[in-house]
Length: 482
Length: 87
Ligand SMILES: Cc1cc2nc3c(=O)[nH]c(=O)nc-3n(C[C@H](O)[C@H](O)[C@H](O)COP(=O)(O)OP(=O)(O)OC[C@H]3O[C@@H](n4cnc5c(N)ncnc54)[C@H](O)[C@@H]3O)c2cc1C
Image (tube, rainbow over all chains, first blue to last red; front, side):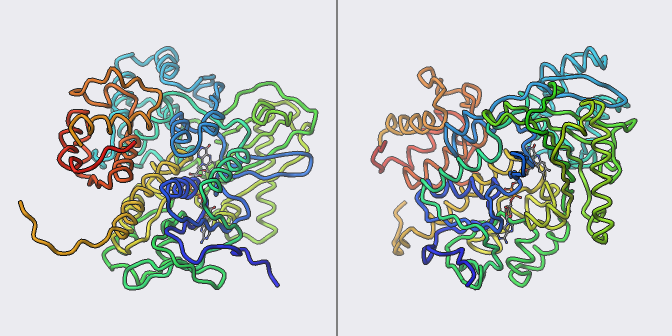
């Protein structure tokens, strides 16, 4: 008989969390600390969602989404996880750009950006300060009609080099483009290009191990290999979930699955109002990624050529060309032995943004050929920074949007959830179905490690409010004296 | 709770959320954000703690009442005066 992955679970839960991305995990931990009975169901064998890693022969450990995150992650980990987790977060100082318009190193903070824009690009100090102030002050309630392109044109008209400096890293970080609302840029920029880029010492596997330990300590039940098939709804109210032929009752369900899958696949359109479904139709998915993973032979070394390298041969930045399968625009993340103290290994991960449709409809043979081409082009580009890199590597593989889809079950293998409009759909879900919540990459600003984790907390506040209200003894009707 | 106790309860919550801040020098009339490194997530934490500790729901439209210590006490005192001070 097949293994029963659900063995030992309770008969009912306050909250069932579908998916164990950083939003799901952080929400689960917060709710457990508030005293609720929580179950996490994850279809993969590891927790973490896109915050993941894999091991390969030769002692290699390769990280998927550990390129860098903003400083805010330290506080988020301290408050919603543990001091120990927060203490493992360290800054990356060597960020590098190399493209036909400019080539330099930066430590990626406000002072250094100000210096570069002044000295390298000849922008007057007042304009730079004004720009920083404007993006910092942007918030959620601002006018949505201005695009990032318009924002850049306003401050740095015609300066495609400056636009590139400001946009390229953010495009890699969350898939946003020059045509997305400027506030999505502002919020992410203020987080990122202000106090530098950070990483997790020990690697993604260490982070997730520590998180798992904390979840278990707080009493969360965790079951992997469990693909939730359905959210059970009756009379506009959540009843629980169906998984592996079983119905598990719960007062609330928090889905960390993609927002569109949560609505169409897990819940079913019949449970939503036509007006809501009309809004859902407008939600655009974000793009996906390709990656090439390179493990250096044990004993091989490379010089420090930067922690994060944004490289491109395109004459100017364009959001569209970044997505082309033949793009020369990619980021390299270099992992030196400091990443995983004690392991003494090097690895390199190259990432490009990518579209599902460019990879989805190929024959096996075409797919493999295209992947091989991706690897070759990546190595060619890397030679410039790490001479003879081919000789130093003993593990090489690539992933594509198809791979991301397989591991996360996200439609089109999206890396960064949805465009901006997805956020209000995610927030309005509980108004459609009592007890159904969504937390996970949506709306650009709620994606990335920090965005997802914080959104998990924001939504657990809503779950707590809901559970609190249903657990209150219903007051007898009485006359109120004023 | 008395007004002073309500103030103390808020201080307790903030010091749990932001343990590195020196709350001794707090100026009640000034915005909390201008004095301490508090962001919108911290304010959400305050709301969650109020629910947990005092069974008190602060609706989203009232979040702005928590902008300074003085306005927080003003807002919370009538809602907490029948509560006992805990932690
Ligand atoms: C290549 C790449 C590089 C990135 N680099 C960075 C970076 O450097 N810094 C950064 O901050 N961010 C980065 N990101 C983005 C970041 O990883 C994500 O935004 C974040 O991890 C998403 O978290 P999430 O909570 O939305 O859920 P996800 O990580 O998307 O996880 C969702 C989980 O739900 C599970 N699931 C879905 N449906 C079901 C179901 N029916 N039943 C059970 N389980 C289900 C999936 O298996 C998955 O585990 C990167 C992303 C990619 C793809």
